[in-house]
Image (cartoon, rainbow, N blue to C red; front, side, top):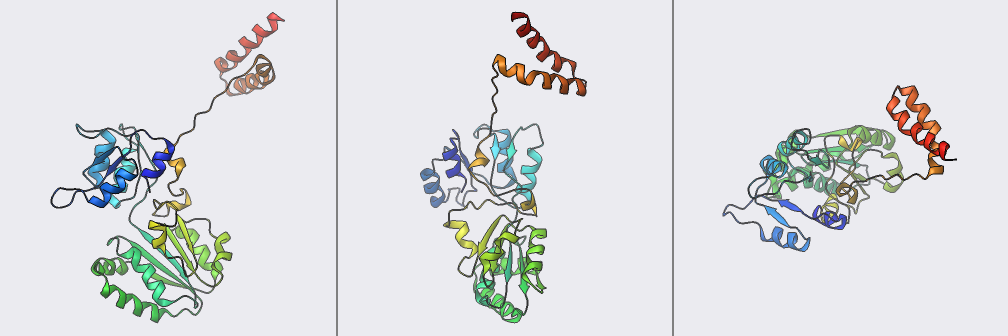
Length: 295
């Protein structure tokens, strides 16, 4: 989800940071995917220490210009600190612990709703899941499904700890549900209600939106084609997810003809004069004088 757009954008060096396994080796699936995606360097480390190594450079790791990707609260803090340091790097966005907000009504299958909530809760104890129930939703069936499915998960203990600081809200209608979601600005927003598509225009702030009963968040992680590096902590109000633009920068170029300067020059000189920037004004008026003298 990061190496592919980096390759399309034409990045010459692409570094992947991944923590080693207990025996010191790197997961073979990661190695295979890295090779397929054209990764040029693998840093055998994770966490805030990997962010620091890439930002400053080490004897074995090249210094980078930009660091992208999600992580826990320490990774997010490291990225935000280093982008404002002498390391001179930029970042994609604050992308911390996973979160999901599910909007569901009485038409939603309680089994599906519980599964969607747990799919994010299992990420870590600091994950946050929120259920917004619309109208006469069957909360008890959803709670029962959460308890049962959580017991069946290998990471059930982690999911349960995440659920302990998550919450359920009841709202009277979809308008209020959408208003709350826009305030919360979730990383992932699942709208599992009747006629889900018609409510998309009411959503302004979300990292990625999943519409309808047959669209679990998991498809966005692995297969639906959207990028899965998304803003968290409410930063979806200011940021979008990673895209090809995240790996590019734009350089503007100007080239005026003599006639062009004659057209624009007087306005530029006047604005510079109003700002009290006489050298700016003179850079134009000296050229205009040269043009006039040649005529």
